Length: 225
Image 1 (cartoon, rainbow, N blue to C red):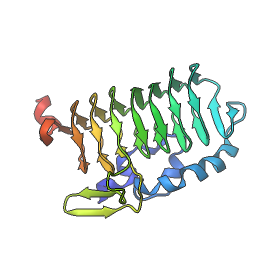
Image 2: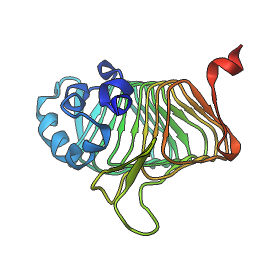
Image 3: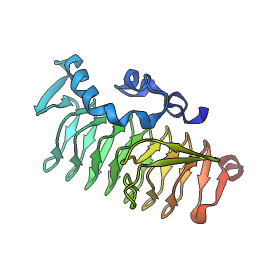
């Protein structure tokens, strides 16, 4: 399970909460603590750089927030982030530098690393988007099982009990997810991998992979060569 450790999925210098993430072995351990952490961490933010714009909502003075967005706390929005028209940002959310949160996109209890993008009609709940991760239009990170049981991560021959009823996707650095893909609860996409549009994904996708329709998985190097 070494590949699934926080430090192997993310370059932690690319998030304002990198030190917080560093205290966990695995990313699914983060979610029960996000809200409490933000409440404590917000007291350490530079008040010359961040403005309190709502109850426990801290926004960098360089961020761009469109009209007709909804943002509830606790939330931190870092430098030069762009929150576009109609975005719905719920509590327990950290939005990194130079990120894009687009129209009709809903965020809840999640972390977006710097330069991550969820630009069009996305649901990102109880999830992490790594540095420069991009999810295409209509991508859904499903966080709740239809049988209402706790989410289990399937990795090789293991079934990893998370103890969480709600867990979306862990998307590592430089991952690209194509339009209208659905990532099932507990999906993990490792660094530099691509997910085809219109696919349904579950389990763990390794580094430098391309996940195609019908669940076909190939190494990126085979395609690039």
